[in-house]
Length: 265
Ligand code: THF
Picture 1 (cartoon, rainbow, N blue to C red):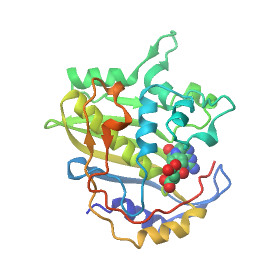
Picture 2: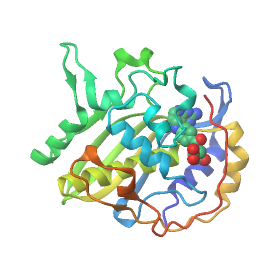
Picture 3: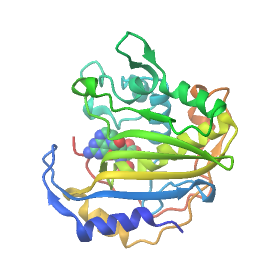
């Protein structure tokens, strides 16, 4: 049973430094940690609390559409980006825009995801299979600068692995979402290019627990993790045409009761 996430929570409780932060909430924080999930062993949907899949699936499909307006999320009943949007629902040039239409100095727009698929098909040994949301020139136009900023794919023995660099990691609320989201993306891409799944590697920069999540985290690490569920993924015609119903991580999802916490804005 993989308990790397829970062990990192315990590490931060034991060894974290009390730090102020942009939101004013305050955190316990450590710097530079890594988690690894062998995706063939199960889908890493954290089991020591209930983790909702609908917002995770919906947010990923929304990123892949290249959308930066919360309207599509709201139509699907997903509210996790509401706090950051302006009165028109806009977030500025955040993840979806940078993934699908990174603006080049010569006026072109670069579809990093389509280029990635092309490289995976034509040259899977490449060491340049990278997607970056960290567009330095656009940072001050974004409602929130990318937390999960930069990811790389790797193919060996017919298996696709992905490593994410997350500069800022809200360990209680955000990280279970981020782990499941990138693991799902790895499965979808592997399915599209005809590979098996390898590892999802999560690398965190400032890994923190907000001070208003400490009680929940103490409860969470007292719980025994269950085996991960299985992902069921119906193959779509392209990476960009998956729908919510094509994705399910409910099969075998045994979990502890939900734990709630306020999100710092
Ligand atoms: N800001 C902060 N402080 N933490 C984050 O995790 C975070 N994100 C995104 C942008 N800014 C962030 C937003 N992602 C929830 C989960 C992910 C979010 C925002 C909020 C959340 O409240 N989850 C609840 C309920 C989810 C629901 O069903 O609606 C939970 O219990 O999981 C990280 O990318």
